[in-house]
Image 1 (cartoon, helix red, strand yellow):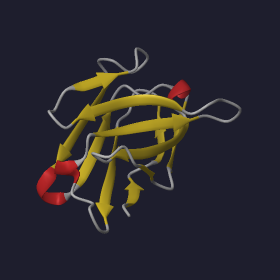
Image 2: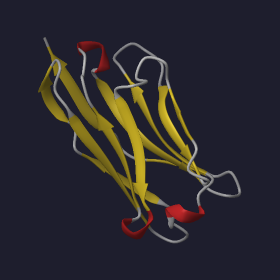
Image 3: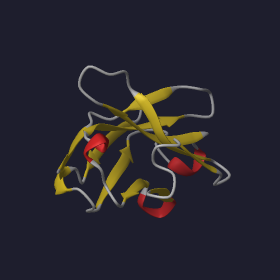
Image 4: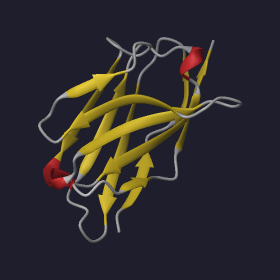
Amino acid sequence: QVQLVESGGGLVQAGGSLRLSCVASGSSSSISGMNAMGWYRQAPGKQRESVAVIGRGGITNYADLVKGRFTISRDNAKNTVYLQMNSLKPEDTAVYYCNVVSRIGVASWGQGTQVTVST
């Protein structure tokens, strides 16, 4: 069982930056052993979508809408995954969720953190 806790969301003006953090805890929670870790988001009335994913080997993948603006990274020693978000736009407003997938394919989700970008 892996517990994920996100933090770092908030209200920011367009063009601003935020850094989200996701701390993993619990048995078998070492992120160094996870197949993939990622950030997803869900805006009101829309489906949850992938924002950024980082694989065990460090390969990253980004949604086209955030390429060049967002950066996913991880600190294995702190069991934490980060999402650095720069040049934020109002359309980035959503609840952001952390996700990890274990080596046996079990997915765990955090409770989400709200990001609101004002014009």
